[in-house]
Image (cartoon, rainbow, N blue to C red):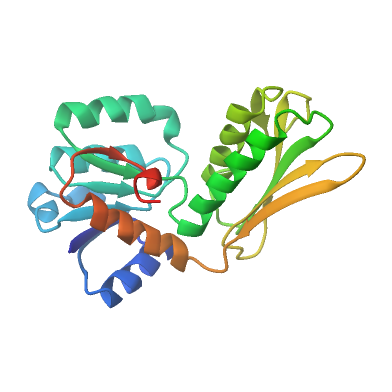
Length: 235
């Protein structure tokens, strides 16, 4: 499989290393130094694109791939407010998009555990639910896309919760404590606290390999497909 990489930070380099080990070929690397010089003929070299760039660049990169009829796997977070317009464009262009707030297979299993636990806890109002997420100092979005996905699933299942916040600890809010420190790859802890006891579930990433592996699996899955897909189509 021939891959075009959009974004060449730590994740892009991790994907390059793992893809090469899996006998795939990186035929194009696009970042802020050469994005203005990108042409359709450059993109025609690739079978699929994997995008881990920046929130302010991702929409443009998605449109570029749609226009070139190149399937794109998007791992950048912080753009989902524009999802409806991207979805509309994908249909218009008959494009191919695979997106996830987190490509780690372990995290996506954790999503399902979180959803199941929230469904169980809905009727136990004595428990207050909150979240803590820890990432490296260079993470741009706060809270993380993973934390937002986890919070939204809790809100879907617990009737007394209406929204999430990193600022307020209201009764109808899932409070998210966001911490940026060191080189942490990503830790997410869901906490249910009562006066009697506490229940916690946690996912802790040891490195970026799980995210890179999931992105490559997604690219292999998307290569010859049309439409919009998520990790639910793989797990």
